[in-house]
Amino acid sequence: MKRIDNFNAGPSALPLSVLERVREELVDYQGTGMSVMEMSHRSAAYEAIHDAAEAKLRRLLNVPDDFRVLFLQGGASLQFAMLPMNFLGPDETALYVLTGVWSEKAAQEAVRFGHVVVDDQAKAEGYTDVPTQVMRPADVDLRYVHVTSNNTIYGTQWRELPVTDSPLVIDMSSDILSRPVDWTNVGVAYAGAQKNLGPSGVTVVFVRDSFLARANGDVPTMLGYPTHVKQRSLYNTPPTFAIYIMGLVLDWIEEQGGVEGIAARNREKAGLLYRVIDEYPDFYLGHAKERARSDVNVTFRLRDDELSARFLAEATKRDFVGVKGHRSVGGCRVSLYNAVSVESATRFATFMEDFVRAHR
Image (cartoon, rainbow, N blue to C red; front, side, top):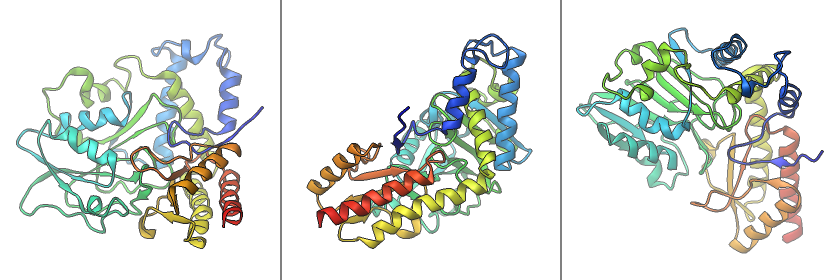
């Protein structure tokens, strides 16, 4: 069996032990005589999977009791619209902190439902940093402040969530379960699963009861958070197989020492690559400022385009997959999500050093 070093930005690597467990249970899940893919979502066997996945998420992330946990579909991109549809009225204002492409897209959807103001400090600096302090308009009552905790394309990350006097709404798609979460001022958090939680197909949403109580009433049934809260995410058929695999990934995270253990691993992995970038500044130019460097997406360029093309070609020959930067910015991006091993990161850091020696 051949396994490559998978640095794709999403869908991304899954733990090998999880894939092997899925293979073992694919045809006959725990003596039921059928695959999870074949089960009714109303069956006792599936509901046990569903409820266990929620319980594991709550335990791993220390989710407060006054939050509801939802398993939805449509990815974070649907949340860009669903969230303001539910929580922003035509006479209300929300602040969107722009730190990359995905926060821009979220803001573009929100303007359909209410007033939007933006903090574009990071955009003015080419998305190389995140703000040290959120800039909010004076004398404006904000319904919420939206931030993207990690920016996959630019490789920047909030080291700590910003402090605001309005509820935070957080897109955690690319760093959920990669580090602990401070829930103090969070109204809603959401994340597509395909980077740290499991396969594509399920989106996790955490919504605080007090925030949910102010949800707009005139919303299509399937797009209303209260619908899914009331029905425990079983209003219609959920992405059952993706939720099942997510549950196995959560088991694996617990085996790695929980979120704290995973966070330490992620810092170690990122540090291996950033050390090489800093050691060879004549070869590698990191995109993010040091204080805003992401632990899960390391972005950089080489000193010229020709050398970058050669670097990417040689990386492919060595079975490193997903290293090419996003088409909007170019360069290189190495995504070090939870399931990427320290050994994979070490191999890539060694490759970076070898490339310098071979092309000086």
